[in-house]
Amino acid sequence: MTALPSFETHEVLNQPPALEDVDLFATDRALANAVKAMGAGDAAGRLSAYGSRLGKAETIELGRTVHRFPPQLKTFDRFGHRRDEVEFHPAWHAIMDMIIGEGLHSAPWSDPAPRAHTARAAAYIMHAQVEPGSQCPTTMTYGSVPALRGETGIAATVLSMALTRTYDRRDIYVGEKNGALVGMGMTEKQGGSDVRANTTVASPAGPDGEYVITGHKWFFSCPQIDAHLVLAQSPGGLSCFLVPRRLPDGSRNAVRIQRLKDKVGNKSNASSEVEFQNAHGWLIGEQGRGIPTILEMGTYTRLDCALGSAGLLRGAVAQALHHVFHRRAFQRHLIDQPLMTNVVADLAVESEAATLLALRLARAFDDAAQGDAEAAAFVRLCTPAVKYWVCKRAPNGVVESMEVLGGNGYVDEGPLGMLYKEIPLNSIWEGSGNVMCLDVLRALQKTPDAMDAYMAEIAPALSDDRRLAAAARALEEEFTDRGEMEHRARRLVERMMTVLQGAVLVRHAPAAVADAFCATRLGGDWGHAFGTLPRGVDARAIAERARPA
Image (cartoon, rainbow, N blue to C red):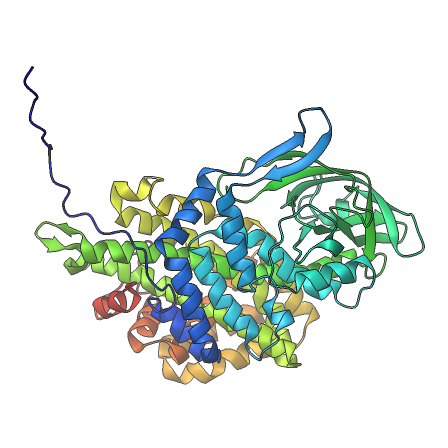
């Protein structure tokens, strides 16, 4: 029988190459500029090294793999013994080894350089673009350190291990490990954000602050890690407890994993529901002071929500820009078509504004750690505000970036699918939008210097742009009217953040980017979708600046 000749139906043409084997720091001019502007330029070499590791094809593939093979709960072994273990794909452990080795869980505490929080923030933005699920245990550990400092006993042991740069996946007592991670458990079925409604009970069990805890948690992230900070009702009121996974004698604590959450995104990370069946926990801080203790942790985790959303947005916009500089349609590259240039330039403005705002907040954390009272007031006011605004704006940018790629953007085999499913999460976790805006109002009431710190931040830029100055005056008028403040809270926070973004862009970004932002977000010369920049904006220059090349 005569063999048929081989043939191909077509040659693959006009498809952009994969965006990989790149330095995520060096190719992100907005991020590199923000790091320098915020005084962390000395970290550029280290950030470039980490950006190169993250941008490697094999690292990107690890990120894809962990979302294809999510963790699995093993409640029992084959003989019926209770296990309560979560099994992960080896790619998860490889990613965790990277992020912990880089110190994103504790470096500002273990190596408190003057701009340690800012440098860490830049690395966090880059990591979000490749594998955001691993940032959950990293962030919780980062936020737990202030709560654990000054404690003794098992809490001191956990803290000492959390300050190392070793990822130790072994399920053994933390005192026998080379590194530790810490989580938190606050929300219950009946309360959600209203943690005062919690029904979990802690009863004294020993003279060293030991309690036994009975109840449940509706969201208990990363049940596989070494210890969690948990809220429970004690005789003295709602209190915070450190609940280790393994007890000092090596036995497993009575924290029963009921199931893993089947989330829309964030597939690589295990989020669970648990029950405490006389689990052992140790009091952190004072009885009845559980909410202030946890809120200090929440301040740092809210910072990371803003950083993570800025990173996810940058990852999506980078893919869109990479696409339009390579893809041709109607005899021209997409970037050479004015309407597409308008779209990607508008996206680039949004991304740079988010990046610079988030880095400015991180620098305030550094300044506050050095004893700067004005910076501490700025942190108190602006952490929930920045978290609200960046996390609210980023999803629109990711969706528009997906549309730039057309059908290819909507296929999960590419990178946009993961970013699309991940991007709503940061707005929900660590306090939803309304919770953040109400927290801003509380900060204005309880921290008299907060608004002064905010105004001091925007003042140096007001003389450089008339639209920014006009928006700042309108904002002041908004605050002179104290009526229905709660009803107007989102509007107030939105105006605060767009003015702040305009100020940091005017001071630290190229003129083309600052002009485009002030003309649109502050001056009102803008439509209701991306791609509506007005005439006179240098869209091509903005797009070229944001191109990941």
